[in-house]
Length: 372
Ligand SMILES: *Cc1c(COP(=O)(O)O)cnc(C)c1O
Image (cartoon, rainbow, N blue to C red; front, side, top):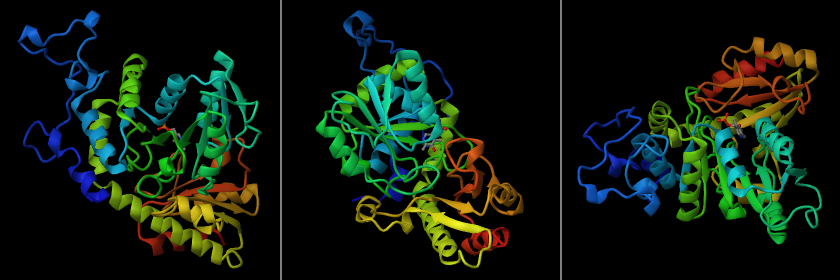
């Protein structure tokens, strides 16, 4: 079987339209019809199949289709690309139109959007740890995130999926924190998988993109039709940047999770010596058997630490030389985030660490001096 690194580089070779080694950015918003009127299909006759030809870039464009082709090869599933992780999540909510959403620890933006649906449309919400029977049913949505932001720790997807499927609910997994090939949520009961491609697929902190992965081409087609109406296809420039990113996707992600694991182990082994550090959270430190079954090809490239107190947490970003204090994550540059700035549900002594691709000894030395 072809490896992820090969697919990231060659997965859209068959869609090349010119001999350029790097696919050109196709900025055209609209595309010429064929001169032959026999190829034209009236809207009342169903129009042409959406992905068969280029019509208007809100529908699709060469760069978005190249992105989807590569992602489909990397993941093995039909993929729909969006202008961000949030539009991708909104597309999933629109597609399933659940009456109830079960949601637990999750990205604050997804919780915020679920709240907006509650406010506007009366969508009910329960916790993923509530009793499902009677509270959630056919066509409702169970929203899981694993590994979970900001901790980088895994939850048992299969266990939640089994409970959800028993009552006929759909399981969405936000897998942003463990990009492929680290885990495949479909192997553990996911019905649809969300990635904020702004993070690891993009990897350079210079684009916004989102992905939904589904199990069959029919669902993809329906999502594409709805994406046309929602107007949330990825832009041409972002798609071209994402194509650039996919060429090094495997290389980056592998190095990032290995460095994050080395850092998590080092910090955890040295809690006694690092006077400001009180706790380390990372999937590599979890011992439950489901973690090894789920994270088959690595660990989260994100971890979190707890320090002695809030005042210390506020000082640490300024003491770090290589970890940039900024929101978002997944870039080749390491970063930290004092999480309470974005998410009021997180304790004020928690700092999230997104590990980039720098030299691991430099990163460890930097953290060690800041944490003492
Ligand atoms: C960033 C993020 C999102 C939102 O994605 P955007 O690309 O910022 O719209 C959703 N889920 C998780 C886990 C994220 O980290």
